[in-house]
Length: 189
Image (cartoon, rainbow, N blue to C red; front, side, top):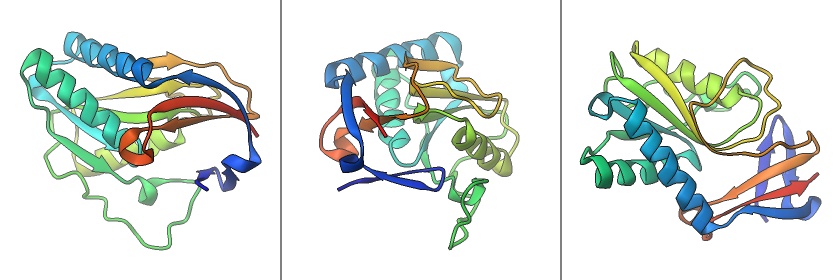
């Protein structure tokens, strides 16, 4: 059983009621391709870097990287970012080094990649982590799902799908790289 950690509450799939599959594997790939093309159109990819927010943002960033390389011939630098040290709602047991980004972000167009945008707190923590390593030219956000309910004034620049939800619902993203299958589903708590 996989646990979902959100804002100090722990849910397991057995505690939630399945409502619907929002995206299947083909739809997820289509959404990531569309996001990749939007990035090519709106960002100077020769000056861009991808930062995948751990855990599911990493394979999504890798998909963007592959799509950009296939379409624009640019192999974007990429890294995995664990934002635990920068969260404001969790006190980490072990301090994570803020120098996780292995390349300079100074004057770069940083594209943060995550699976779901909800309250904005994960994104805020990721921005803080990026800024701790240097002054980026821009920081943009690419997400597979934007479900609303923001607590902070944060919006995504690149969105695969907007899914209006109630606060009693949970969006669950499965990716082959982390979960053995690819889909996006909605559950009720």
